[in-house]
Image 1 (cartoon, rainbow, N blue to C red):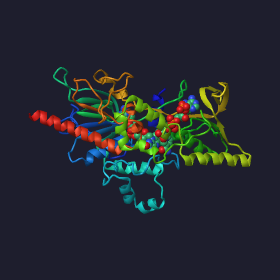
Image 2 (image 1 turned 60 degrees about the horizontal axis):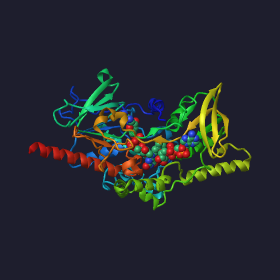
Image 3 (image 1 turned 135 degrees about the vertical axis):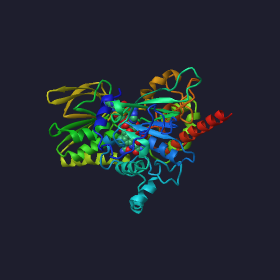
Image 4 (image 1 turned 60 degrees about the vertical axis):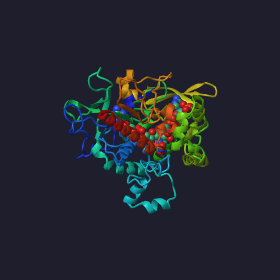
Length: 467
Ligand code: FDA
Ligand code: NAP
């Protein structure tokens, strides 16, 4: 089940206000929603997370200038801030940054960032491929400052429709509707020849459980934790066996010395994320080609074999740290960490001052109640759902047998002949482009491929007009 409510809560808790003096992309747009020079934008990006940042850099570095604008619903750049717990590390090498794999000489690289911050030597001395998520966020902020003029923050895209009158040949523009409290009337719209949807993963709650004051999804964890005013937290349960769950259990254990933490897991504790060199090849840019060209059987096999690089798995270091804490508790006789193995959460109810969690054992199907102050559901995410913004174009976007968008190798959604404008996806392409679709591994290369495709489309249009 997706959690719209949780997403709204996340937005309300964003840490940084809209920066003063930020140029709002398209601010000087004409009343008809076209770009500053009266032409539609060449490209409009929906969402401004790392994927769009990468694309914006690829456009910036492209020899052919393009008119581009991005809309982001958060008040400022924010990369999974609800999970920005201290000491959480990246799950990808610092070299898989916003630009390096596409352009190793880019001035937007992580190395350029370190150099500018005066930390390059110390970073290298640290001999670690994986920066903290906090440092990587600082890198994203640093990169964003040079692209800010292209972004409108606090601006949520609500719909994408065809622009222009129908029946006069294929539509070459879309109109992007934006809910923007800073605009007159609270809404605005712009036109574009290409739209790129990069709206990110969607938090998922366990079936039948809703997020609320005492039941949190991991995506909002830190906002909820910091905003908690319900008295001392003595008993917290954390659902899930993935990286989010393990990081939250570690954080709670270390931050709340008087609390007992129950980890409810469908397995025997946490399993290790395979980040060994051979397995890591599944994230190489070339692996996208293998996956894209592969038969359905090959695609299924790749997923099956390499799921454990990313889903429901945890970094070695975090697993060992948690085990050590539990062992130290045994020695001291003060057990604060409670691993409820082979179990799933089946329901939750609020009774008086208590949150009563129904735990179902996978071993014997028995159910029992666990009373806690707060339940944290680190139950994962659904892939990006482009239809949330593209729904209005549904009839022009034929789906495959399983109802998924058909997507070209250049991440362009296949459309009927009614459209000549481009619709591109960064995310939601797990079925066509494979495991790295929702990750950072390939964003630099993907941004470049999308920029190339958009430029090629413009060149072809130009030639068509000249002929
Ligand atoms: P992302 O979700 O970051 O950004 C999407 C943006 O779109 C958001 O800012 C959102 O507000 C905005 N948006 C959504 N709908 C909108 C609308 N209608 N209008 C306007 N704006 C809208 N991967 C990896 O490779 N290495 C890693 O270390 C990690 N670490 C990690 C930590 C945590 C806690 C999570 C949950 C996930 C990761 N990931 C990861 C995977 C993660 O998907 C990846 O890091 C990026 O966030 C993907 O970037 P995107 O820009 O595609 O999505
Ligand atoms: P995840 O890997 O999908 O894990 C979700 C977990 O919740 C699974 O173990 C799932 O088990 C379990 N679960 C779901 N419903 C349950 C229920 N009712 N009862 C018990 N368990 C239940 O999600 P994630 O940990 O949030 O990770 C998502 C992505 O974010 C990954 O790419 C991860 O690498 C990334 N991430 C990165 C960092 C970092 O960079 N430091 C931190 C956190 C997350 P089943 O599979 O059996 O349902």
